[in-house]
Image (tube, rainbow over all chains, first blue to last red; front, top):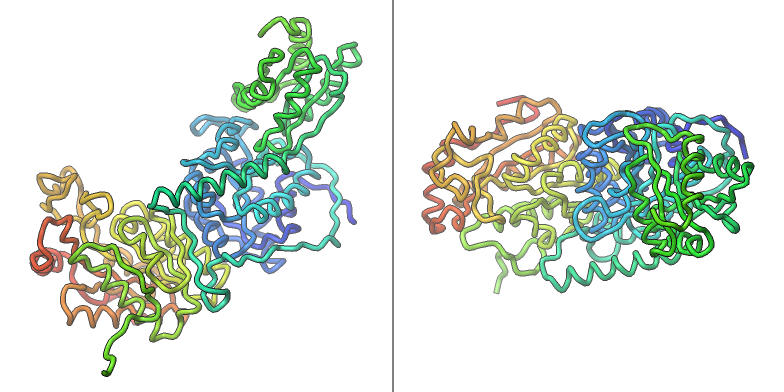
Length: 356
Length: 248
């Protein structure tokens, strides 16, 4: 066990290395580039490969190839770059290949700006590319959690043979915090009997494919994916609750915003308002059960995000109309201030169950 | 009875879907024969592209990957960078390689990736039903150039061998044709040389195989061969464009 002071973007890289990832393919984009800078130096030190591609299209397809060859492999990008990777993500999902994609979100739509944002929630939690699929989406909120979640991301992607997305923003990437690294922990990478590594190296002949021209065969694949997604929903949903049991108003927030909301909960309680916080760690699968439970005990829910109200819709689904669900967001790369969230919290707690 | 010919080991015993007069079957066989002769079948991984030849994934008796449209060179690179001792080939048509995938193709070539690209050029889109390709000839009628391809509207056809030969990192480039037995024998030699460039670690290798698509040219197989001789080969001259000795 050793303690370090580490930046979020570096923790993404180091977390990947600790998880046994030895291949990174990517294309520079702010505010993600530091992940690439870190791994460009670090991967060769551990016998790995860092390769800069000519585009995000190439990056995700290099990842596709390396995954076919059985590697633990990842890429990282930011919103516009992640949009370019969506076709590849759909092919990875359809071909049932494991890999990890990190999205350090920025303001948008379009070229937007490099400010922190949570505007890619819909894209990430609804598959993102074409076709009927999901990716697991993890949203850490501290440097230590980034470090640990990278290992989890690779493990989940291997276990379910699917891409896993890790979502953060420029604040998470730039933030420096102390982390504890357990260097003794060994990594077990599961065998890959399905990998296309040449017929001499496995039984029979392997084919990695997402084309199923016979409709019945495609439906069979879709059903297999559906069952996989149902299993993930049942087993892998992660959520942190803070002061929720007696909360009249439950805030719902992930990533950067969840840190601010935690402070807001404390402040509200000091002022006699029973506030609580639900922090989804997996954005897909979403912790609908926790929301549903809170909707029975609290008077209203307030989703706080750096977008126009994207996770808000999931909170509404979870609340099932039992209590009003409100939204407070800052846009364009702006971050909600604790005092403004507190103000909003007071407003909705006064309105309580009397409608939006 | 003496057996004088047989299916190459590197081709599977499955029915092919290709149309009558299509030359993909010939190209498949040549690639499979070369893989057999080089003794690398068990460590070869092929990447099929999008278009008619996507089904190559099903026909080669080696490990196969089906890539997204235009991305076969990137996927092949991903595999090769993880497993440098394997033999990688991409099998791409004119739309996949020269339209949507030309960026991946040029960058893979310029990095000198040790992979072999088999590029089948028949001047027309097959799978989607006969639309213009980047290699469609000026004046050629397709579903999307019903009055013939015009330079003003559609621009000029791309000559892929001429484009890529000067690029550093490229070890071998040859254009062959599959329209008669003599040229088919030459084509096989070219494919073998291209794979040898990879096995010897020299660099990226490309064989462009001119081919006919009678279905989408609206010609009989025999007429399509005549069309190749009269129209296509004069515009796309056959021969070696690059070898380790340099650009020809």
